[in-house]
Length: 297
Image 1 (cartoon, one colour):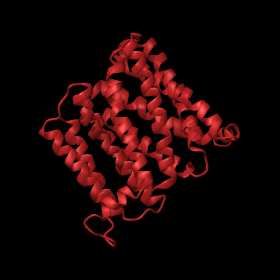
Image 2: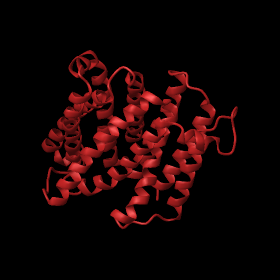
Image 3: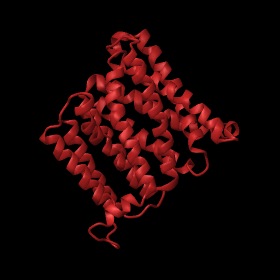
Image 4: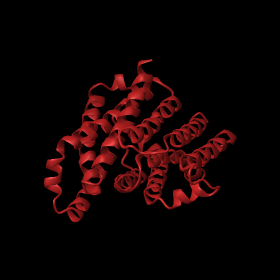
């Protein structure tokens, strides 16, 4: 029960970070926002790596790094893709409603399934295909506007929403990252992989921050408390779900983490006064059911 609660708290922390990022998105440069958050995450993940080194039996793993050519390529690709996805997500926050774009991230396992046959030689079964259709149907319901409804209105709404398209690109990157992470973590361990890739992402973002934001130093100072809170939320979420996976089935953890979608839709309605709550929460629930079908595949 404790680890189930821990995973739900990880989902809540994740959606809390998204709410704060949405509120800051129009005040802070998206590159600076990404850099500020990931800097805190990298420091906390480093502390986690040190704990794994000191107490390997508790974490049921040990620090090992196999610096092969494949590892280095996957490592660099993951760092670069995560940097791109972090910036795209914060740009999406500037443009679109929180309750419309966060559920789009449920497409990430769909992209993982579609890419797996080519990269991992893994084929989806009938249950996974049902999950894909549920996610597609859920995304249709998510975009419903009963006052303007026509058969193609939700589809037009999606493709006219630049923020949603940016988040769809993030979902694609996350789906590919899942596959690359499976390869990379197999040559070290999940803790070191998480820390090293987040650190690489932070390093790659720094020149982008300097080039795109002339006031990045003052911006980091002015919003340091917000960055600390958001980075803390992300770091807690990463550590909590990593610990939970040691005690629970990965499919259970993955399914429980999808509660972040529901809380983000609720936060958008409650704190940001976003409309069409019933349609959005219904679509989000259907998408989560689809993800569960895939996760329990």
